[in-house]
Image 1: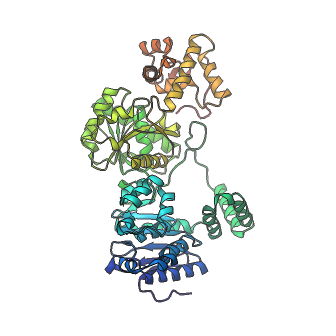
Image 2 (image 1 turned 90 degrees about the vertical axis):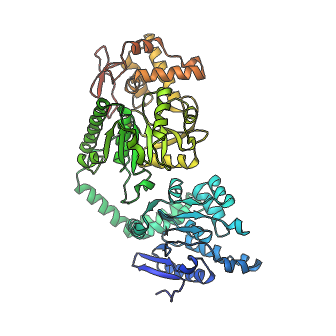
Image 3 (image 1 turned 45 degrees about the vertical axis):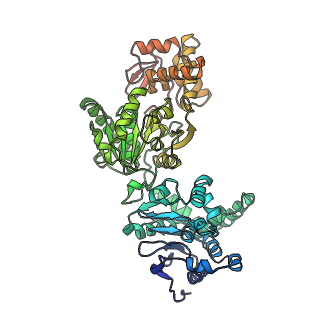
Length: 582
């Protein structure tokens, strides 16, 4: 059934799988009045009869400036109880198939609540989202008081609803209120691209899944099982699964990089976007890495695979050449293992290794990965901060040093936190996000999206000596070293006890070799000074470091290393992770 003649709305696109409408009151910045509400009800009625994806956008560079204040001023008690605006938002949210809000420019008050009612929100670089209702003597009664809390959490929702905070596009992306950001001219195409992805799903499965998401917790799992019972008998299920199996049988299976417990590495699809600097899939367009050692190269490689352009800063030309070679080798391994669809040349073209700190001026994020020395880290962080743009973030890969102490040396501690990767970066799936006292909530939210985008799992810990992982890791490692020192068992047998008995992916002594015995000793000494003598390093560890036996990087630690493999000094073969060490 065709829509009636519309005056406050405009049909942009009308296809079998989607309907795109634009709010069309540009003379009042698309303020939502009663006439627009009536027409939105007509749109909902059509989509309830014939379910399709709905795209809602604004016009003339504005999504919706809010409800029509001239009308709101004249409304009284009975009209408030009528729920003129709130009920249309409920109806839009309950539409059978997903709703996409394409936010360009202002989305305030009722306009923001219309966006909150959508299943997906994407934005232009000019988007501004907020709820100024309390400044006008009313409450945001069309869904913001509960939907916004669900979307961004209570603390940030209170800033918006009670203190008048307005989020710009990058802030909305950082807290995942919007899922992507685009140039204004590209926003309609981005909305269609998202609709195309949704349209590839089975419509009945989509309808059931959307309704299940909004079902009360007490209804689960009964409602899930009932929906699945219907879908298990649907023709679409058999057709789609048969087609999937036929496609799988017809194509060769590529090798995959594996994580440290043998699971295939997760990859994040990268939608095309002209504004990667806003972090469309969680990574800034340009990521700087301070330090091009094994860890720094691993971090740079991870962001490179996620679509970022990467800049590595090293201290001199010789170190820069070594970092360049290390990155090239990592890229070649990724191409050989089919963990990327890009060629080695394409990846290398997006990377720079330099000795000039000014190269970081255009970076949206810089990750510090220099050796674990407070004076070195703090001085280098200050040098980098001095050249960064106003919106850039700065993080440290420290495994144990105090984030608050490092932050105290910076001009903008709120833009700084810890981002602790594990060695070797390609094989590890965990990243520790260390929240300092001054770290902005937006930074912690953004860090979670960066970690997810590079295919790893974030955990959030407060600033505390050793954080979570190093504190636990050192305890296990130094006890293993004491056992070796006391002759309890050989290095390979101690590792085998943990790998085979406790399912550790890598034994504690082999892992210490990978981390570096000097690094392990430094962390142990730091924790002993802050948390007590239980972290005191064994004499054997100190002796090996004094002898220059630092692990894989020096060729020998607790094992003798040749490239990526290790054997015990006794020449007995050490136990190996199922995937090997890479």
